[in-house]
Amino acid sequence: MSSDAGPAALANLLDLLDLERVEENIFRGRSHASVIPRVFGGQVAAQALVAAGRTVSADRTPHSLHAYFLRAGDPGEPIVYTVDRIRDGRSFTTRRVVAVQHGEPVFHLSASFQVYEEGLEHQVEMPAAPDPETLRTDEDMMSWYTDRFEDPDIPARLLRARAAIDLRYVDPPPYARVGEPREPRSQVWFRTAGKLADDPLLHACLVTYVSDMTLLDSVLLAHGRGGWAVGDVVGASLDHAMWFHRPFRADEWLLYDQESPSSYGGRGLGQARIFTRYGGLAVTVIQEGVVRVPRG
Image (cartoon, rainbow, N blue to C red; front, side, top):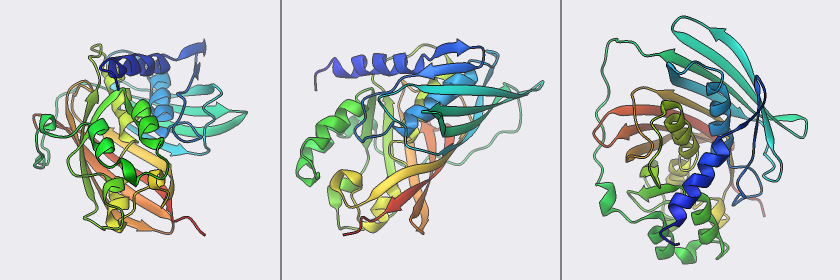
């Protein structure tokens, strides 16, 4: 990929997150061309958080979100986001967002925003991880394992879809070692492929976008599965929760430390912590997804 691909892709992503205001509490968003025939879940979650944030005063930033993916989104049609202003308190603001396409809800989000305040403070220690600059880029990683993919066009399509994000795996991703069960844990460094404006909501929305990219990798690792890209698993996000603890920037390196405590009944659970490069616990993420082995 060219050196201009990342900044151009980031500009396109920022344009997608700049929703059109249809009415006071109604917004409309567009979609990327997707690697799979549905809208990327992280995009819908990020756009829904943008819609919620557009109805909240600037002194309040997101501190949590809880979401359900209800139907597969159609990347060829716009998505309409309707915001319900549940509560505006002195310290906290709550919003509910329903994303609708073809007359049916495809996604539901509840988000809470808070005015900054002082309080008790502690956190877990950041786990050990190599510096991101010492790791292979996503493009290098895929080129190293290009023979593992079910379709030879998949690596190029994945790279185009991820071009706005500089993503670096600490250990080889699931598609690299199919048939070799490993510890259900994965670490990824990431940052946007360019600088961002100083808007905390924008940084939260971009981390929300990235949070859906790799979280269920740890489920696949436990079983030596490579995922949809190698054709040995069918999957989709079901629900997603995030808690934003401390200030961070999405255009600076963040460590996504992910693990899976359980998979059962066609579902897999991923949980993760996102740390700043200097050790601050920025975000906690939990997601459950469909993880099915294809029949026949």
